[in-house]
Length: 114
View 1 (cartoon, rainbow, N blue to C red):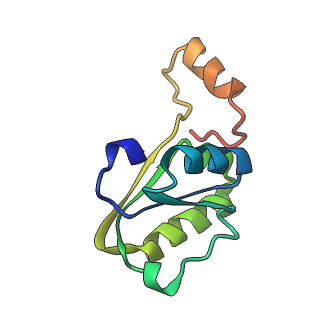
View 2 (spheres, rainbow, N blue to C red):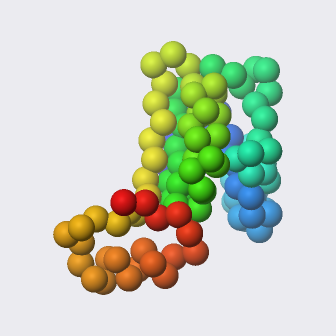
């Protein structure tokens, strides 16, 4: 996302050290990248209520319900009044094709929701 969000204060975190290393090698001078889980990530005092936007793309299906709730609480505390959390994840739907359902089932995420 850093590539598409110029002139921003971008802070990204992921629990996978290889993903963080790749992000730092590509965009290290334009953003901050932290290796942490949702449960262990703590906002600095100056980060609280300081972001306009929080993005969670392809994240929720990797989190159980308690971890997802922690993510929502973290986003809530990071966002300015009127800020937005945008999420994007696959989900199961009654009318979806077998192919779509199979692709979701093969993903590494174990918490694909209905």
